[in-house]
Amino acid sequence: MKPPHSLWWTTLDEPVTPRASLRHDLDVDVAIVGGGFTGLWTARELKRRDPQLRIAVLEKSVCGFGASGRNGGWASALFPIKNDAIVSRYGIDAFTQQRHVLEGAVRDLGEAISDDGIDAHFVQGGTLTFARSELQAARLRDEVRASRELGLSEDDVRWLEVSDLYDFGYVRGAHGAMYSPHCARINPARLVRGLCDVDEKLGVAIFEDTTVTRIVRGRRGHRPRVLTIGGTVSADYVVRATEAFTPTFTGERRTLAPIYSMMIATEPLSASFWDEAGFRDYATFTDDRHLTIYGQRTSDNRIAFGGRGAPYHFGSTVEEQFDHNSKVLSLLEATLRELFPTLEGSITHRWGGPVGMTRDLSPSVMVDYETGLASAGGYTGDGVVLSRVCATAIADLLTAPSTETSHTSLPFVQHQGKRWELEPFRWLGINVGIGLATWADHSERRHNRESRASQWLHRLRG
Image 1 (cartoon, rainbow, N blue to C red):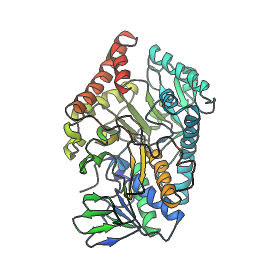
Image 2: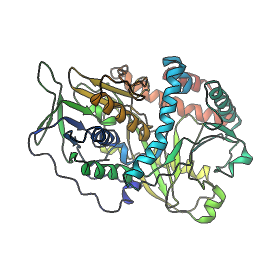
Image 3: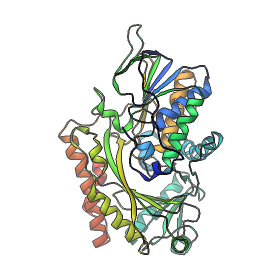
Image 4: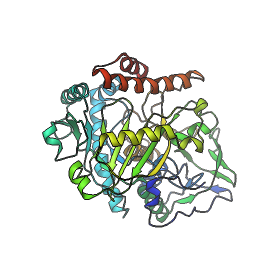
């Protein structure tokens, strides 16, 4: 497989040449299936704890081929579940600990890639959630007020009036914005490819163009194994870090649902445009609509902009043809030009790909000491930081299983989520959810009040 056709891959310092594929049997301490953020951070963290560990990373294409190399480039403290839902599930203490870990992880990510000498265009300028109607403004103000009751201060999240926006960034029709400093923009392809090089220098064996056909659990004195076309890898532990491609493995069809996002990027924009729009500190941006959108100002003054809306495909199918949805890409361009009406020039890049979503919307880290199998994933689009947090948890669990750490005590660690429904109910439920989000946004634009569609959507999401 070739790298995906995204803006990010065109910014790499040199063309990507796949590393050699596995062509022999191999014996290691830890085998990692998947060469994205989760797999590569896991290898790095394990090597930092024990440089003598024999680690192999097995990647079907090239490292970063999946969401790690084509996402929106938000390194944020965001979590797929809203704050009140986390408190309801796990309690206020677990919520507070998780919040502190994720907020610190944004800063730690920047420090880690700086220490490793990776130029991933990391700038922590925060994130803006714009309100583009009175209804959205009321919801976001309520969210800020609710955050105070959960212990978040003005330094964590605050409301910005319209007059304040010009110091941060502005989109047409903004009634204000919710701002949090706990987000950075990055170039994800530069980060994942740089991390791949760092792992290799640490002594990690990386095999690209290596298709894993099966993961065999350990039992009765037999170690777990990874079967590939070119050879078998035996290990003490096998870590599955395959995110949205997880359903392609036997028995994992209902573990994660691959949800497609699409992205576009503009040509480099003029200084006069940015003088008007702002974003001098490179804050990422979205608004409070139900159907997710996300954007950033890139290092070369483009806008990279993405969003949801592409359908879920029956049976959790993942195919390259789904990476390009003309209808959604056209809607993204129309939305971007609505947000920035003075935007001139053309869209130079269009791409997409799947992210992994669990049934309960929570990421999951699992280590089974009896079978030797471990896994992490289910980030629902918030994986740039969460992948490193989960990788740190796995490294802690594998190297010091009897020691509780700030990462292993997170509520989604050793958490087995509910499996997705059988088809056709999975296909029906997810696509109904996408439709309800679209309907809710359309209704709110017309009537400026919450619609039944949004109420049904909240119920569907639990």
